[in-house]
Length: 486
Ligand SMILES: Cc1cc2nc3c(=O)[nH]c(=O)nc-3n(C[C@H](O)[C@H](O)[C@H](O)COP(=O)(O)OP(=O)(O)OC[C@H]3O[C@@H](n4cnc5c(N)ncnc54)[C@H](O)[C@@H]3O)c2cc1C
Image 1 (cartoon, protein in one colour):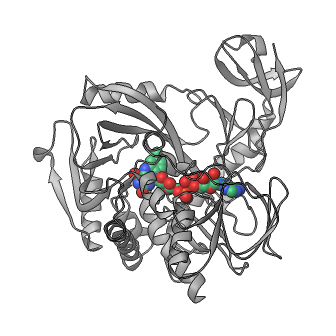
Image 2: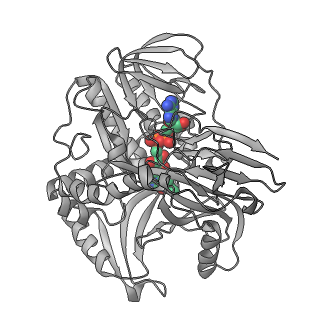
Image 3: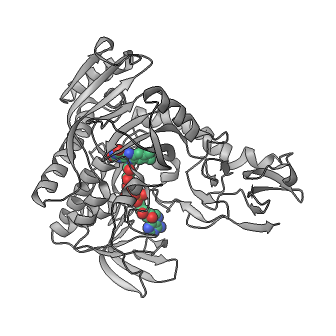
């Protein structure tokens, strides 16, 4: 099993776009953000059409852990320090409202998506200091939480914060209900955006003329204006799906470096972690590291599947929700959810639906995408810079010493071939798949991910399979395939 939600939910199929069309509102992307935005617009009597490159929920939404929580790691202390108490409270309130909205909507529409109220725990196995500071900050933001001392916790845990009234659900069962009255085109990849004419072009060459456009395609593929590529990267995590006799009532997140996450669903335990910046897994063995870790909690687990997924990380840890750019009228964006897209999609879709229906902006909101003047942005920009420079230039100057024949069966890597630097995957039969290592998005040097047999971009997170086909945005082009060699 490689994805729990897809295995437990059949979503309907939709046709692809087969002609040019005019629409009131075009939504690019059929993940939770795009679907909830279309749903909220429909509730306001506005007509939106979703254009999805693949199948709906085939992106990160299909692989989420499905925690509906405002316990987003050590966030509130950071927000008070880098933004202001007022803006930290806005962040907390929006997430609180989103949790309540899920509960109300699920009850009102009688949606069978196994929604359960629960507590959300943040814990550390290393230090209690950061958690104590976070607890004080959460209290300042009026959040309902309590601090648990080492003596009250299982052995090896230094401290924890318990947030009450959080939730968990099966996200695809939820989506299956709310898409019922929405207009959706699947297998319709938007490749071009003409900002002057508000015109989209699909990979098959069909034109979509829209009055308003919402980018809900995870990482926007438009580089300028907006410049999201300068203020967002992607982070990947790995998950084991295990059958487990012990059902966990609550949801858990470790705030230490590896970011371990736990939740139960039906007879399964989802255990994840080993996070890293996309493109930063040259050494591999992430699933084995997870297995070793899980054994320290439960020796008798029975693994039935595994998968990995990634999300967009904004430069200042706050999502970008609002106008795509100050210079573009009627174009909106929801992105940079920092692995908290369940609540962010819920309140983010309210923000966008309100902006579209009443024409106001959200300039003073912490979520406004054109914010640039906080301490958080300045500090993070200093950290982000070297990644782009490394990815864009230095690596290209090195021609590796490794030759094609030195590569082991079932392995991939960057090698020298005909005097040039190329990327190669050698399968178990010795067939070599040779591709360029230059990312078609902005030209960064790709790196091999041995756990997923993919070429991953360390700058912005585009990913390609070993044949060079796109797996993850923001690239809209496949990798240059050089040759297959026996
Ligand atoms: C390991 C991990 C665990 C997580 N767990 C949680 C959790 O427990 N709780 C929580 O709140 N959040 C969680 N998240 C975050 C959450 O899952 C995501 O933020 C959310 O699913 C993103 O939704 P989305 O609609 O923005 O993106 P997606 O679900 O990726 O949807 C975007 C869609 O756009 C389509 N698309 C892309 N480009 C184009 C194009 N050019 N044309 C047309 N379509 C296009 C894609 O095919 C895709 O279907 C987790 C994230 C990760 C990585």
